Amino acid sequence: MAQAAALLSRLLFTGSRRPDPAFWTGFAWAALLFVATRAAVLGLYSLRHFDVLQSDPGNYIAIADYLTQHGHLPSGPEIAWRQFPGLALLMALVNPLVGNMERTGYLVSWACSLGSVLLFHRLFRDFRLTLLYVVFVPSWVACSTLIMSEGLTFLLLLTAVWALCRESRLGPRLLLLAVAGFALVARNTALFFLLSLVLAWWWSAERDRPRRLILYLLALGALPGLYLAWNLAAVGTPFPQKAGQETYFAFTASEGYPTSMLAAPGRSLLHGLGLASVPLAKKLSVVASLLLAGWVVVRFLILKPRAGTPDEGQVLRHAFGWATLAHTLFHLCLGGSFGFSSLDRYISHAQPALALGLAPDPESGRRIRLVWIALLALVGILFAGLTGHAPVTLFHFLKPEPPL
Image (cartoon, rainbow, N blue to C red; front, side, top):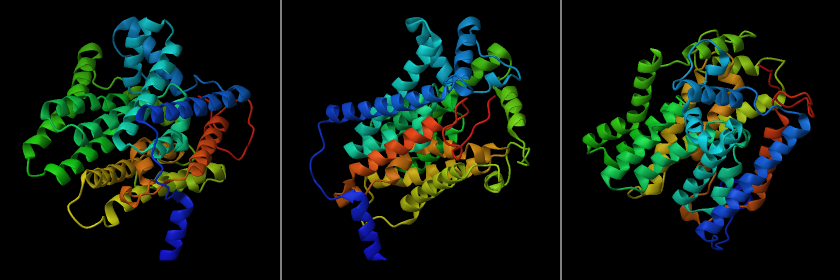
């Protein structure tokens, strides 16, 4: 067993201690990789006549346009109103400088995604790990190509990591955590990752200071609280997207999936895996995502770290383990088709932890081989560019998506 593990380690990682490029040079290469891979996906979309504004991207544009025209969020049962509006709010603020909401959407989405790459690179100072973050997992490549909220969400999650691990002064830490709390307006289910991350980090690093935890939680809730109060005053309900989400859920809860928003853990997953109509590639994508999340939990929570007082990196990896566990367990409890058809995408929202989970231990001196990063980039491009509903289907065994 030890020999097999050593062989696998040599296959995946290099022992080369060649220094990384300078910080900004490394980020420039990572940004170039981001732009090149996303441009390749857009090229495949064009080849397949894929509508880049179908579903979520078009919804964000519609919500941002509504905000611009009315000064508040839309409410009602229309599927187009179902998204949490963090990204649309930023688009509405930036659009006066651009003048076209679609271009604004791409500008904000790509800028946030690149911002998350920059912050990840700054936090971990590992050039190859940053390259891995850019192209892995495939669902991240797909979502960050379009006008989607993943880039903004990851930027805010990493802002929380920076606040806890890089900012020792209480005032700036609370300010950064307040900014990070906007992730709950961009994607409400980020609550499970973000809250678990802060709780686990506090328990490992500062559990003898309970007052600080209260301050951290108040900071995280500041912007979401203002958002809910604004909705209540402007449209009479704190969750104006609720009716649209229920309409969409009813639309997708077919083929024998659970008809409740929450179900027994894994019920939707097992049902989807048993459907003969689902392509094998989709099933493999879901199972691989679940296994990856499981590996992160096992590696960061179960496998014993080296002896001695835990350092900052160990504390963060421990917190990432708990955050990934809570995040995954919640999404396994989703009913309808969401607990299967979107599970690979939802698990990808733990992206910073998933990428770190594939990195060698820092003390080993090993680094990820570039050939694997190149292979993952190719897989990400093909997964993103060749799936989704479009008039032209190049490979029928890949994941289909019904049009809305």
